[in-house]
Length: 331
Image (tube, rainbow, N blue to C red; front, side, top):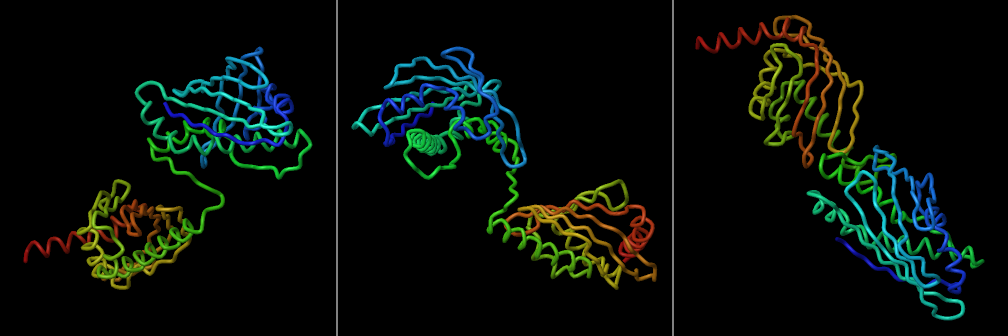
Protein backbone atom coordinates (compact mmCIF):
# COMPACT_ATOMS: atom_id res chain seq x y z
CA UNK A 1 0.00 0.00 0.00
CA UNK A 2 1.18 3.50 -0.90
CA UNK A 3 0.21 6.52 1.23
CA UNK A 4 0.69 10.26 1.05
CA UNK A 5 -0.37 13.34 3.01
CA UNK A 6 -0.76 16.94 1.86
CA UNK A 7 -1.69 20.05 3.87
CA UNK A 8 -2.73 23.44 2.53
CA UNK A 9 -4.03 26.73 3.97
CA UNK A 10 -7.35 28.01 2.64
CA UNK A 11 -8.22 31.69 3.00
CA UNK A 12 -11.78 31.05 4.16
CA UNK A 13 -13.54 30.29 7.45
CA UNK A 14 -14.02 26.64 8.34
CA UNK A 15 -17.82 26.92 7.89
CA UNK A 16 -17.38 28.10 4.27
CA UNK A 17 -14.97 25.27 3.62
CA UNK A 18 -17.46 22.77 5.00
CA UNK A 19 -20.30 24.20 2.87
CA UNK A 20 -18.27 23.17 -0.17
CA UNK A 21 -16.85 19.88 1.07
CA UNK A 22 -20.10 18.33 2.31
CA UNK A 23 -21.45 18.09 -1.25
CA UNK A 24 -19.88 15.06 -2.93
CA UNK A 25 -20.92 16.38 -6.35
CA UNK A 26 -18.55 19.31 -5.92
CA UNK A 27 -15.70 16.89 -5.30
CA UNK A 28 -16.59 15.10 -8.52
CA UNK A 29 -16.72 18.38 -10.44
CA UNK A 30 -13.03 18.92 -9.69
CA UNK A 31 -12.07 15.94 -11.81
CA UNK A 32 -11.45 16.52 -15.55
CA UNK A 33 -13.16 13.86 -17.59
CA UNK A 34 -15.89 13.20 -15.00
CA UNK A 35 -19.02 12.62 -17.07
CA UNK A 36 -21.41 11.80 -14.28
CA UNK A 37 -21.67 11.56 -10.51
CA UNK A 38 -24.65 9.52 -9.42
CA UNK A 39 -25.40 9.88 -5.71
CA UNK A 40 -26.80 6.58 -4.47
CA UNK A 41 -27.34 7.62 -0.85
CA UNK A 42 -25.74 9.76 1.84
CA UNK A 43 -22.59 7.65 1.85
CA UNK A 44 -22.24 6.16 -1.64
CA UNK A 45 -21.78 7.60 -5.10
CA UNK A 46 -20.73 6.28 -8.47
CA UNK A 47 -18.49 8.36 -10.72
CA UNK A 48 -18.11 7.83 -14.45
CA UNK A 49 -14.78 9.21 -15.67
CA UNK A 50 -13.42 9.28 -19.19
CA UNK A 51 -9.66 8.90 -19.11
CA UNK A 52 -6.96 8.62 -21.73
CA UNK A 53 -3.28 7.90 -22.24
CA UNK A 54 -1.93 8.90 -25.60
CA UNK A 55 -4.17 7.44 -28.28
CA UNK A 56 -5.97 5.18 -25.75
CA UNK A 57 -9.24 6.43 -24.25
CA UNK A 58 -11.61 4.54 -22.02
CA UNK A 59 -14.35 5.01 -19.43
CA UNK A 60 -13.69 4.04 -15.82
CA UNK A 61 -16.36 3.58 -13.15
CA UNK A 62 -15.31 4.55 -9.65
CA UNK A 63 -17.33 3.61 -6.58
CA UNK A 64 -16.82 6.14 -3.75
CA UNK A 65 -17.98 5.38 -0.22
CA UNK A 66 -17.92 8.01 2.55
CA UNK A 67 -17.45 6.13 5.81
CA UNK A 68 -17.86 9.19 7.97
CA UNK A 69 -19.28 12.69 7.50
CA UNK A 70 -18.07 14.48 10.63
CA UNK A 71 -18.26 18.14 9.68
CA UNK A 72 -16.83 20.57 9.70
CA UNK A 73 -13.61 18.84 10.72
CA UNK A 74 -13.45 15.42 9.10
CA UNK A 75 -14.46 13.14 6.21
CA UNK A 76 -13.29 9.54 5.80
CA UNK A 77 -13.76 7.80 2.44
CA UNK A 78 -12.82 4.76 0.39
CA UNK A 79 -12.88 4.23 -3.37
CA UNK A 80 -12.65 1.33 -5.79
CA UNK A 81 -12.12 1.14 -9.55
CA UNK A 82 -14.74 -1.25 -10.89
CA UNK A 83 -13.21 -4.08 -12.86
CA UNK A 84 -9.65 -3.09 -11.94
CA UNK A 85 -7.48 -4.47 -9.11
CA UNK A 86 -7.12 -1.05 -7.49
CA UNK A 87 -8.71 0.38 -4.35
CA UNK A 88 -7.86 3.00 -1.79
CA UNK A 89 -8.94 5.17 1.09
CA UNK A 90 -8.43 8.64 2.40
CA UNK A 91 -9.42 11.33 4.84
CA UNK A 92 -10.09 15.05 4.87
CA UNK A 93 -9.19 16.87 8.08
CA UNK A 94 -9.92 20.57 8.63
CA UNK A 95 -8.52 22.78 11.38
CA UNK A 96 -9.52 26.39 12.03
CA UNK A 97 -6.41 28.59 12.15
CA UNK A 98 -8.23 31.91 12.48
CA UNK A 99 -11.66 33.35 11.76
CA UNK A 100 -10.79 33.57 8.06
CA UNK A 101 -8.28 30.76 7.62
CA UNK A 102 -8.62 26.98 7.57
CA UNK A 103 -5.91 24.39 7.24
CA UNK A 104 -6.94 21.17 5.49
CA UNK A 105 -4.98 17.95 5.38
CA UNK A 106 -5.64 15.28 2.79
CA UNK A 107 -4.47 11.72 3.37
CA UNK A 108 -4.75 9.26 0.51
CA UNK A 109 -3.72 5.65 0.07
CA UNK A 110 -3.85 3.28 -2.89
CA UNK A 111 -3.23 -0.44 -3.03
CA UNK A 112 -3.28 -3.11 -5.72
CA UNK A 113 -4.89 -6.48 -5.30
CA UNK A 114 -3.87 -9.88 -6.55
CA UNK A 115 -0.62 -10.97 -8.23
CA UNK A 116 -0.20 -7.62 -10.01
CA UNK A 117 -0.17 -5.64 -6.74
CA UNK A 118 3.62 -5.01 -6.78
CA UNK A 119 3.38 -3.57 -10.30
CA UNK A 120 0.42 -1.36 -9.39
CA UNK A 121 2.21 -0.01 -6.36
CA UNK A 122 5.39 0.61 -8.36
CA UNK A 123 3.32 2.71 -10.77
CA UNK A 124 1.59 4.52 -7.89
CA UNK A 125 4.59 5.37 -5.74
CA UNK A 126 6.03 8.33 -7.70
CA UNK A 127 2.61 9.68 -8.72
CA UNK A 128 0.55 9.77 -5.55
CA UNK A 129 2.30 12.67 -3.73
CA UNK A 130 2.08 15.02 -6.71
CA UNK A 131 -1.53 14.03 -7.32
CA UNK A 132 -2.51 14.78 -3.73
CA UNK A 133 -0.78 18.15 -3.95
CA UNK A 134 -2.56 18.94 -7.21
CA UNK A 135 -5.95 18.02 -5.78
CA UNK A 136 -5.41 20.10 -2.64
CA UNK A 137 -4.54 23.09 -4.80
CA UNK A 138 -7.71 22.69 -6.87
CA UNK A 139 -9.81 22.35 -3.74
CA UNK A 140 -8.29 25.54 -2.30
CA UNK A 141 -8.96 27.47 -5.51
CA UNK A 142 -12.59 26.36 -5.77
CA UNK A 143 -13.41 27.04 -2.11
CA UNK A 144 -11.80 30.48 -2.12
CA UNK A 145 -13.65 31.43 -5.31
CA UNK A 146 -16.93 30.18 -3.81
CA UNK A 147 -16.19 32.33 -0.75
CA UNK A 148 -15.70 35.38 -2.98
CA UNK A 149 -11.91 35.49 -2.74
CA UNK A 150 -10.34 36.15 -6.15
CA UNK A 151 -7.71 33.60 -7.03
CA UNK A 152 -6.16 32.44 -10.29
CA UNK A 153 -7.86 29.22 -11.36
CA UNK A 154 -5.57 26.21 -11.50
CA UNK A 155 -5.81 23.61 -14.21
CA UNK A 156 -3.44 20.99 -12.85
CA UNK A 157 -4.48 17.38 -13.42
CA UNK A 158 -6.67 16.09 -10.62
CA UNK A 159 -5.83 13.21 -8.37
CA UNK A 160 -8.64 10.77 -9.03
CA UNK A 161 -8.61 11.29 -12.80
CA UNK A 162 -4.99 10.21 -12.92
CA UNK A 163 -5.62 7.38 -10.46
CA UNK A 164 -8.32 6.25 -12.88
CA UNK A 165 -5.76 6.41 -15.70
CA UNK A 166 -3.40 3.99 -13.93
CA UNK A 167 -4.87 0.93 -15.70
CA UNK A 168 -3.73 2.52 -18.97
CA UNK A 169 -0.32 3.38 -17.56
CA UNK A 170 0.14 -0.22 -16.43
CA UNK A 171 -1.01 -1.40 -19.86
CA UNK A 172 1.76 0.72 -21.35
CA UNK A 173 4.35 -0.79 -19.01
CA UNK A 174 3.26 -4.38 -19.60
CA UNK A 175 2.61 -4.33 -23.32
CA UNK A 176 4.82 -1.51 -24.60
CA UNK A 177 1.97 0.77 -25.69
CA UNK A 178 3.65 4.08 -26.37
CA UNK A 179 2.02 7.38 -25.59
CA UNK A 180 1.41 9.63 -28.55
CA UNK A 181 0.81 13.35 -28.53
CA UNK A 182 -0.64 15.84 -30.96
CA UNK A 183 2.06 18.26 -29.83
CA UNK A 184 5.37 16.36 -29.70
CA UNK A 185 8.20 17.85 -27.69
CA UNK A 186 11.25 19.48 -29.26
CA UNK A 187 13.30 16.47 -28.19
CA UNK A 188 10.88 14.07 -29.90
CA UNK A 189 10.91 16.13 -33.09
CA UNK A 190 14.71 16.22 -33.06
CA UNK A 191 14.90 12.45 -32.57
CA UNK A 192 12.44 11.81 -35.41
CA UNK A 193 14.31 14.10 -37.78
CA UNK A 194 17.64 12.47 -36.93
CA UNK A 195 16.16 9.02 -37.51
CA UNK A 196 14.83 10.18 -40.88
CA UNK A 197 18.32 11.29 -41.90
CA UNK A 198 19.85 7.93 -40.95
CA UNK A 199 17.16 6.02 -42.84
CA UNK A 200 17.49 8.16 -45.97
CA UNK A 201 21.27 7.76 -45.87
CA UNK A 202 20.80 4.00 -45.68
CA UNK A 203 18.27 3.87 -48.54
CA UNK A 204 20.51 5.94 -50.81
CA UNK A 205 23.55 3.83 -49.95
CA UNK A 206 21.62 0.58 -50.40
CA UNK A 207 20.16 1.76 -53.71
CA UNK A 208 23.66 2.57 -54.97
CA UNK A 209 25.03 -0.79 -53.81
CA UNK A 210 27.42 1.03 -51.46
CA UNK A 211 27.93 -1.38 -48.56
CA UNK A 212 30.63 0.81 -46.95
CA UNK A 213 28.22 3.76 -46.67
CA UNK A 214 25.28 1.66 -45.49
CA UNK A 215 27.06 -0.24 -42.72
CA UNK A 216 27.42 2.73 -40.29
CA UNK A 217 23.63 3.18 -40.36
CA UNK A 218 23.03 -0.31 -38.99
CA UNK A 219 22.96 -1.56 -35.43
CA UNK A 220 25.27 -4.58 -35.07
CA UNK A 221 22.20 -6.68 -34.24
CA UNK A 222 20.22 -5.33 -37.18
CA UNK A 223 18.08 -7.62 -39.32
CA UNK A 224 15.73 -7.24 -42.26
CA UNK A 225 12.51 -9.15 -42.78
CA UNK A 226 11.39 -9.31 -46.40
CA UNK A 227 7.66 -10.01 -46.37
CA UNK A 228 5.78 -12.26 -48.75
CA UNK A 229 6.49 -15.69 -50.25
CA UNK A 230 8.95 -14.93 -53.05
CA UNK A 231 12.54 -16.03 -53.49
CA UNK A 232 13.85 -13.03 -51.55
CA UNK A 233 11.47 -13.45 -48.58
CA UNK A 234 12.92 -14.14 -45.15
CA UNK A 235 15.20 -12.74 -42.50
CA UNK A 236 18.75 -11.50 -43.02
CA UNK A 237 21.14 -10.30 -40.37
CA UNK A 238 23.89 -7.67 -40.35
CA UNK A 239 26.58 -9.45 -42.40
CA UNK A 240 24.06 -10.73 -44.96
CA UNK A 241 22.52 -7.25 -45.28
CA UNK A 242 25.86 -5.62 -46.00
CA UNK A 243 26.83 -8.44 -48.37
CA UNK A 244 23.61 -8.22 -50.36
CA UNK A 245 23.97 -4.46 -50.72
CA UNK A 246 27.40 -5.02 -52.24
CA UNK A 247 25.94 -7.67 -54.59
CA UNK A 248 23.22 -5.24 -55.68
CA UNK A 249 25.92 -3.10 -57.28
CA UNK A 250 26.74 -6.03 -59.57
CA UNK A 251 23.11 -6.89 -60.30
CA UNK A 252 21.94 -3.31 -60.89
CA UNK A 253 25.01 -1.19 -61.74
CA UNK A 254 22.88 1.90 -62.35
CA UNK A 255 21.63 1.68 -58.80
CA UNK A 256 17.94 1.67 -57.94
CA UNK A 257 17.83 5.47 -58.32
CA UNK A 258 15.05 5.82 -55.75
CA UNK A 259 12.25 8.37 -55.86
CA UNK A 260 10.98 8.99 -52.33
CA UNK A 261 7.20 9.45 -52.19
CA UNK A 262 6.72 9.73 -48.44
CA UNK A 263 8.61 9.42 -45.19
CA UNK A 264 6.97 9.38 -41.80
CA UNK A 265 8.77 9.30 -38.46
CA UNK A 266 7.32 8.78 -34.99
CA UNK A 267 9.97 8.34 -32.33
CA UNK A 268 11.92 5.16 -33.11
CA UNK A 269 9.71 4.20 -36.05
CA UNK A 270 10.28 5.44 -39.61
CA UNK A 271 8.20 4.43 -42.65
CA UNK A 272 9.34 5.19 -46.23
CA UNK A 273 7.53 4.69 -49.53
CA UNK A 274 9.65 4.88 -52.68
CA UNK A 275 10.09 3.58 -56.23
CA UNK A 276 13.21 2.37 -57.97
CA UNK A 277 14.21 3.09 -61.55
CA UNK A 278 17.20 0.88 -62.27
CA UNK A 279 18.62 -1.14 -65.14
CA UNK A 280 20.23 -4.53 -64.51
CA UNK A 281 23.66 -5.60 -65.74
CA UNK A 282 21.80 -7.53 -68.46
CA UNK A 283 20.05 -4.40 -69.68
CA UNK A 284 16.62 -5.18 -68.19
CA UNK A 285 14.60 -2.41 -66.56
CA UNK A 286 14.02 -3.00 -62.85
CA UNK A 287 11.47 -0.54 -61.47
CA UNK A 288 10.03 -1.95 -58.25
CA UNK A 289 7.87 -0.26 -55.61
CA UNK A 290 8.80 -0.39 -51.93
CA UNK A 291 7.48 0.32 -48.47
CA UNK A 292 10.04 -0.12 -45.71
CA UNK A 293 9.27 0.09 -42.01
CA UNK A 294 12.35 0.87 -39.91
CA UNK A 295 12.70 0.38 -36.17
CA UNK A 296 15.55 2.39 -34.66
CA UNK A 297 17.68 1.85 -31.58
CA UNK A 298 19.97 4.57 -30.26
CA UNK A 299 19.90 6.33 -33.61
CA UNK A 300 20.75 3.22 -35.68
CA UNK A 301 18.61 0.85 -37.72
CA UNK A 302 17.65 -2.17 -35.64
CA UNK A 303 14.99 -3.78 -37.85
CA UNK A 304 13.58 -3.30 -41.36
CA UNK A 305 10.33 -4.82 -42.57
CA UNK A 306 10.40 -4.78 -46.38
CA UNK A 307 7.36 -4.79 -48.66
CA UNK A 308 7.87 -4.89 -52.46
CA UNK A 309 6.60 -6.66 -55.58
CA UNK A 310 8.02 -10.17 -55.10
CA UNK A 311 6.86 -11.30 -58.56
CA UNK A 312 8.97 -8.65 -60.28
CA UNK A 313 11.98 -9.37 -58.06
CA UNK A 314 11.69 -13.11 -58.77
CA UNK A 315 11.36 -12.60 -62.51
CA UNK A 316 14.14 -10.06 -63.01
CA UNK A 317 16.70 -10.43 -60.22
CA UNK A 318 16.47 -14.01 -58.98
CA UNK A 319 17.71 -15.69 -62.20
CA UNK A 320 20.75 -13.41 -62.07
CA UNK A 321 21.38 -14.37 -58.45
CA UNK A 322 21.19 -18.07 -59.34
CA UNK A 323 23.70 -17.61 -62.14
CA UNK A 324 26.06 -15.74 -59.78
CA UNK A 325 25.75 -18.55 -57.22
CA UNK A 326 26.37 -21.23 -59.87
CA UNK A 327 29.41 -19.39 -61.16
CA UNK A 328 30.80 -18.97 -57.64
CA UNK A 329 30.27 -22.68 -56.93
CA UNK A 330 32.26 -23.69 -60.01
CA UNK A 331 35.20 -21.54 -59.07
